[in-house]
Figure 1 (cartoon, rainbow, N blue to C red):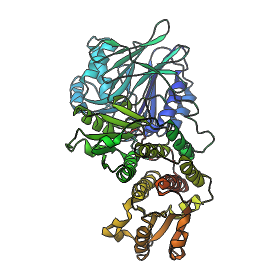
Figure 2 (figure 1 turned 90 degrees about the vertical axis):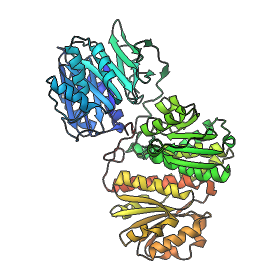
Figure 3 (figure 1 turned 180 degrees about the horizontal axis):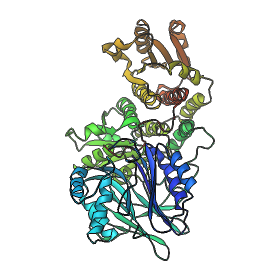
Figure 4 (figure 1 turned 180 degrees about the vertical axis):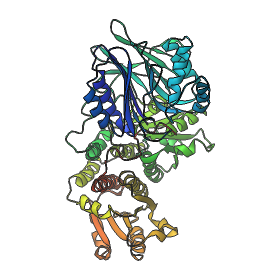
Length: 591
Ligand code: M6R
């Protein structure tokens, strides 16, 4: 949710670096974008545009900016509509700030500032921060002191960076609840503060991650350097870690979108996850396992429930983090609590994990970004090996999550069989684009499946929704007749996930119930089912897709690649931006 970047340099072409970082941060939000900078006369300037960073880039390039200090922002709107006046940076009396997070007491602060005579131009919670800093400067404080005092008065979550025209040699940043990293360029000529390592991938080789309550000052002395202060004002050294994000990770490498590139990495990711899995967690010690996550990560948890209960015979609960954290859950010491997150920054998952930690119970995180807040705060972390995932729709990370969870309960895995089956979808002759054309104009869709195919149905429906904006529901196939079947008519497509496994006959019966109501079926099955279709494939309302047969344990992997590609082609057929679907952001750092 919102990407922030700040840069201070000896060079005066800082705007190029701000824009390139914003392009890489765009996955965090793309409602509007903006930069603020000090020009050669140290006067504060601001450029903001509504929409994607590309528009800001074109505007900035036309202006041929010369500046050595500036901040930038790409927004996912929380308070206030998507307009230029709500776009960041926000300013007051020569101060400019960008913010990621939510200020909960902004109304109260705003009242005081309005009484002081400040006039607000936006509907955002963020603008109070700029005015608050300006107000403290007016009362005689230095920029740093004014910033520090303002941060202490804020309630909520934030990562903030600020510049001030009367102190043109320092950048300030503060972190509480939202991620923030600081780094210096290898030639020590530039310093940066940003939301994440991806933003700084071509700018800084080493990073320090701020901890809760930290304030960072980046300044120009003989060289560019930074100092970090804890909330009690003490100077502190935070561990410096290599920035592992490479240019390759943040490039499309010839694919037309990050999403397609990332789906095509699913087999490699499965292999890497298998080869690098060296965690010795004995889950048999626990009476119960609770898995907590959001979105696609939550669905990986449900897949794991089917596996762990069947293989390890341990009871598993799977919960949505935003519900878990507020429902006063009964926590038990002999349970294993697993938190799954690609980004490692999802605020609900992070807060749910903190709740468990506060009860004195050890936590295990399954996280793709090993420098993220969840990875750093968990007692134990399993790193999923998906690599950097940029497409807003999570794809290859889901594969890595499923495989890691499978390996928690079963080490004897035939990885070649998994790889082969994913590659057979990626390189096979299924005309998925043609199928996508059939469903793209549907009013709504169902995905149905039984057993472990049910969470894959949930994942399939989520991907259709978020990329194609078609109302889609994932359902246990046996549950359709308990209500949803009322929706079925000749305009509704149902994707039936029915590989030839122990649920096959039952799912086929459910598909027939839908056909009896004139619904259309896309039957996604496996080659070994061909002799058992009993004519359903001949029905004019049925389209069949045959995937390679496999050990039923591994079928979720090839089904996943198939549903990801189907969602991709459906969104493409509708002309949507698959990497940046409307209204979404990849990293959900607000509640
Ligand atoms: O980074 P996380 O795995 O914690 O993110 C959880 C969800 O926000 C995420 O899976 C979301 O649902 C994706 N857009 C799904 O494609």
